[in-house]
Image (cartoon, rainbow, N blue to C red):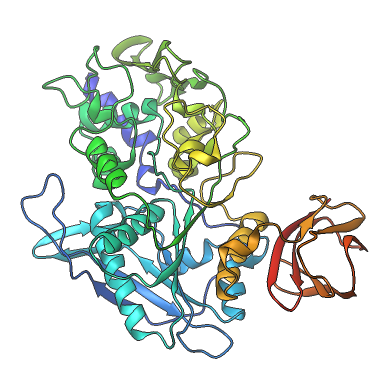
Length: 548
């Protein structure tokens, strides 16, 4: 009788878990026109930690040529992130670059750049079915190596590539570029943009992991089992998650917690091994490495340590109800009950399940750390039309959690997830960091402007050392007047200044003759983000300008 009613509960509540998602398509997203999808196969095989042989990875890609000359001569590769089941296809990846009714890919194509979307599909190779969106990061990186080599062979001219890696795609891009350098394979790539990527690991609340796994293993519910197998126990999740339920299980049990394993633990045989491998590879040295992240660097948290996620009673039928309580991991050095489930039949408990978490002494639990956020309601498919699941979501007291901690996205090796990051400890040479935590891999006008500047500056052949001791905005954000400082060692005898919108539209232009000191330029621009371009005939400098 006990298992019968738990089965009823699981089928009622978790029928939508297969819709779990970690990256949303923005509202009013702009999708591309139909193109031809091609398949690419790695020419370097990879053998995973638990595999008995090596397999050649596969990918699918589309090339969206620019709208200027329609020639493949300025390729930008956009990579797939964590997407088990391939729920986000190539048009969806293209659309994910949308922001504020625009699309960064469209902007770049209008400026002469070619967009190449590389997706990780589900495929079969040598008798093995591989779910690319959750597969080993290393095997997907070998697919990218083949893509880079093919594009460098097919492109017209000598312009080097740009690699943009959102989420797990940033790890794939980093691994592939570093692997090529370390193996004397010239990537012919000038710029690598990491976009909210988990260089020091990712996070899904361990309380939620325990809950889903309990439903899958205790009863054998097929839907929950699919979520565990396809998502939580995918090779990529086991490589990336800093705290994984497999690190906590009691010997001989598939769902019970070992009471001696309370501190965060990665998946055995995966997490530590992958991080060590990634650290040994480092970052590509011949490429400009920059990052745009969604987590705040000013200490803004996502909720607070130990906060209650949900504490509710769900009525299943006239005879059965369930008490469910989940919490974030606690403050530094503290212990709390993170998962607490009691199934009641006619008011009497017939099954209980509890798990406990402890945070290390040097950091509070990562669930509430500054970072690009994930959403529990997103992970549950917004209820999928199921009333019990909708009731659960409506009862959530804390929906958002830190998915990609700020420290991780900046690739800073600091055990304290809440510390103020020292950017000098990061391997990146330039950063976009928002003031507030944003949804994971959300493109905003500001982050799009950062990426556009990085891509454009390289295309204009503006060298790195030209950005020191040049023209400076005396005040940014700008008020009623744009004030430009001219260093004594810089010629401004014939200086042209232009202001562009984030879409590349020229809004203002003025030429200054024989000026020095400070230029004051009045404007009537609306509040927003703009590009200030300065050209003295010797070099061109662009500055991201914010108007309040």
